Every structure is written in structure tokens, then in C-alpha cells.
Length: 278
Ligand code: C2E
Ligand code: CA
Ligand code: CA
Ligand code: CA
Image (cartoon, rainbow, N blue to C red):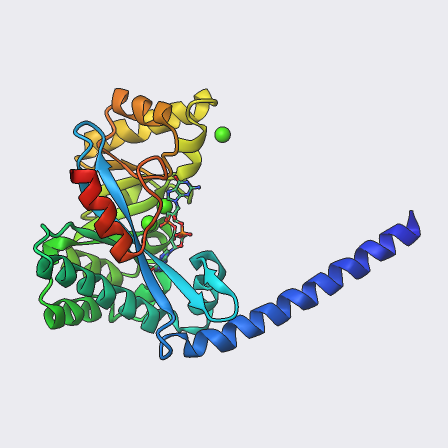
């Protein structure tokens, strides 16, 4: 048992070194990823649960690293948050969302609102609303076409100044959603203090709601809370027809997930949307 324990330990520390190396590599490559144009913004449609119409898209960042292929945000956003690159990356994401909007306009498509994810770290610097205003002004995208997805972490770490920024974004006409609702500290007190438009029910509740009555109860409670507070509720991670049906039954407004579509590259989305509308 002792020998085995030692082996396990060696394996564990080798693994840790490998992770540290991976991290170092990732960090080095991440520095140049923006200049080298290695980021891509994919989009996933959100539908109205009743009519089935596409009502908006969520923009999801991908890193196409030449040696490693397509890297999901979970593997580099935390690093970018730690080393501060998230500020430049976040500005790029917003500008890219504006370019997508312009691309739709130029193609004669009715532009859909685009939801962009915002990291809590982006708020900490205190110039977030200025940055958003500048990027919108540069691009000409109407503020009403932009939705920002904030997490509970943003709410919990927001200073007075941040709260003022959030109100300013809202006053500009930007939509505000609370992402991953139910997974954080779920302090319900800020729901009243913040000018939110939407609540996004975390995928963990949606994916278990058919099998687990507790998750169904939580989903139902969030939908009802949204109704009481005048917030539109979006269920994320909808993969099965039964989930969509249950969401319709409990009165959830909007749904997003692989059942409708995976996140797609901009041109793939245009094709998908054309087929969808046909
Ligand atoms: P999120 O905002 O909760 O985004 C939803 C995640 O669920 C996305 O993962 C999406 O691809 C995935 N998803 C959507 N539908 C389904 C489904 O039916 N089943 C399953 N299993 N998954 C589904 P993704 O794209 O890997 O993004 C992960 C997280 O990375 C996002 O979670 C968001 O927090 C963050 N993120 C993505 N793009 C950005 C960005 O531009 N900026 C920042 N700060 N964070 C971003
Ligand atoms: Ca999101
Ligand atoms: Ca989410
Ligand atoms: Ca569960």
C-alpha cells in the first residue's frame, strides 16, 4: 500500500508539472493570440419557447490555436482574467459582435440582438461602460441590439462605481442578463437593486430537470421569480425535446441549447438561420 501511495504521489506531481507547463505555454501563446487573429466568435441561437422563433444569439468565444486547434473559453478565460488580457480580449469580443451585426445588415438580414459575456474582472478597472460606449459609437451598432451577460460574481464584487456603470449601460439602452442563475451565492437581494432584463437558468438545473424533481422545482421557482420581478427567463443547455416541453409548460420564455443548435461560426449560423426560416 505504501509503494502504491508513493507511485500515486509521483504520478500526481508529474501531472502537476505538466499542468504548470501547459499553463505557461498557454499564457505565452495567449499574449500573441489577439495580434495573430486567432480568436473567433461563435454564435448560438436563443428561441422563444412558444413561437419557436429565433429571438437573439449568444456570442461565445473560441481560440483557434495553430498547433492545438479550437480551444474552449474555459481553458483560457481564467488565465486571461489573471494576467489582465481579458480587458483587450473583452474589447475584441464586443467589436467582433458589432462587426457581426454590420455583416447581417449588409447581407439584408434583420439583425438579431447579440448577447456578449462579461467577466467580473472587466468591471474591476472602472472603465467598462466607457469602453462599451466607445465600441458602440465606433461601429454604429444600436445599443438595443446588445445584451450583456453578467454573472453573480459581478453583482457580488460590484463597487458603488460599478453599480453606477451598470445603471449607465442600462440607460444607454443595452439589455442586461444575469447568467448562470442559481449556481453562485444566489443572494437574491441584488435582483431588486440592479436594472436587469433577463435571468438565465443554469444548464445544471435544465439538464437534470426531467430526472430530478428537485431540479424541476428549482427551474419552476426561477421562472416564477422572474415573472414576479418582471424579468424574462432563458433556460440554457436545452438538449432534449422533453426539456423544451417541460419549459413551455412551466412558462419559461426562452430557450437555448444543442436541441436548437450548437454554437456556430458566423457563416454557418447564416446558413442555419436561412434553413430555419425557410
Ligand atoms: P456560458 O455563458 O454559461 O455559456 C454557455 C455554455 O454552454 C457555452 O459553453 C455553450 O457552448 C454551452 N452550451 C450551450 N448549449 C449547450 C447544451 O445544450 N449542452 C451543453 N452541454 N452545453 C451547451 P462555452 O462556449 O464553452 O463557454 C463556456 C463559458 O465561457 C461561458 O459559459 C462563459 O462563461 C465563458 N465565455 C464564453 N465566451 C466568453 C467571452 O466572450 N467572454 C467571457 N468573459 N467569457 C466567455
Ligand atoms: Ca452566457
Ligand atoms: Ca450560463
Ligand atoms: Ca441535481
